Length: 422
Image 1 (cartoon, rainbow, N blue to C red):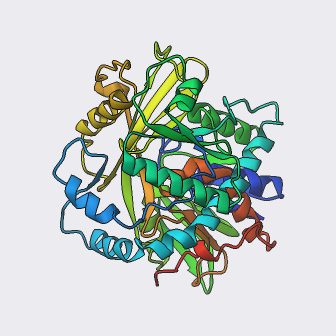
Image 2 (cartoon, one colour):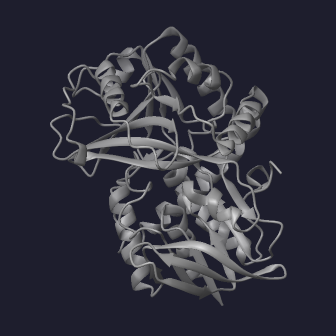
């Protein structure tokens, strides 16, 4: 039996891994060359702590305030785009207190599944991706941030993440004695881990090639051959040569990240989704040292030590199109935020070639789309993970394998129903 996975990021490759383990012949098709996508440049968090979805009360109002600030951490590019308008209306309707409450347990559950699966990969000799299960800090500087932290810790405890701690200023400094910190305190999520995404993706790619999966690079999916309620084949066009190809399969998995809306449309399926561009800068042999990865609450930026000698700064959520040129002022905004929390970090603005950016697949409510679509019996979707693609990657792959093989999924997938907005 042949499975075709469309998409070569962490979601697609994780899916391919589990399908291969369960006996499928697997082909992975990607419009790129598998060497760089949104799974490579993120901050490497594997984080059950991220149980609050992107769509939250107040985020829309804050977004309007930031719209004209070129260094702001959240930005929606104003333009006439029916897809953006449709997504925006659904996003606004989803940004409620009840949605945040209902999303917490599902996001926790899939993150815990994913974390367990990543740790199982480490038992294989092919994997050593600088994984550290030591926790994640969420650092705050203001009284408002302190109140938010108290509520978040309470919610974490309600969700069973009982090793979540609220730290005062002295307790925070004791964890980071190597550098000065400008903060009132922090949350320490002991449940969280982090890794070096570049190394993880490279090793996963190499491992799957040794398992004799078929990798089809630089081919964009442009159509599907349909027969009743089945998809018989996938049609592609080579992005360099223009050559057209057809690949037959028994199961089709759509894991094309921020491009998934267009691919799903070829299957008459509507996915409210927009690309959310993020940026990161990685310092090799960094002169700055931190012990813990950290989210900077008010600064809306993130920092991660990686591989012993590297440090990565990342952030921003820029709701835009794939065709809009990158706005490098966003990177300055990230570096400014880091400087406000770590005043000794004098990070010069890097040359353009040292700045990474990628497009996160942002669903209309901050929850992923995982499951079958109604129109076809052999098509499964795995996308819409927003900023949590790497965190939820291994878990999503496991869940897709269970769906395809007709097994009882490891968790209730109803909150992730693909056509929940239809």
